[in-house]
Length: 295
Image (tube, rainbow, N blue to C red; front, side):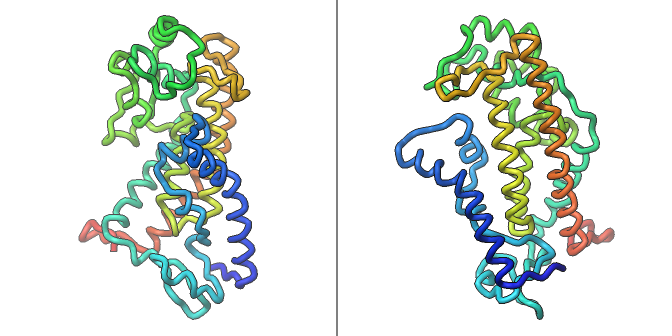
């Protein structure tokens, strides 16, 4: 256990708030004006977590806060001899039982060979043959017929269930893989942009046992990944000075793959930190072999 003095944890909390306000404040300003941003707002709208949820600072499991009584009203915090800390033994049975599932998903993903051949075609497969598109206020870079031709000629190879479910009915059967909600762990792989963006989701779901710094680290990476995701899409975002990665060309596909490789490397230590957090929680709430439940 690490013990933080009140001065230390107040400094960490203040630094966290300053860091995340750089992302949260522009989001709230856009909402007040009825505006939307296809890159920035995705992480607030697709991942439907209130900014206030992760602006509130948490030290994470294994940390004791001296003079931390103000944290006691928050769920899972308890007083100990040296101060205040989070206690995973207070987890509900349902939430405890999700931890081995998450650990398996994260570790299986980490140990699977990355795939580099998707070229971000998922965004194109969400447009091909569609009557309406998700970002309807933005123009497409290519005519619909050329978008469909590209999807059909390259062939989508998406391994991410949550991306696949947004494919148009015409493109879903073209996908090489067919993950379902039940088989997510059989397909997730560390080269996938959306799998690496999802680390933010798993971190925020792990609050308050995940540190707020880990959540912010995952959000920061997801934000950069989303930018490449949109640059490689069929939409024209040049008005916001977002240069396209033209995956319809060999050079664009090479650029996309290079970005994938960098993000996979940067996601790996964040994924490992989440695996280690799961192990900490499981060590504090061991599995009973006789009952087959966490206790």
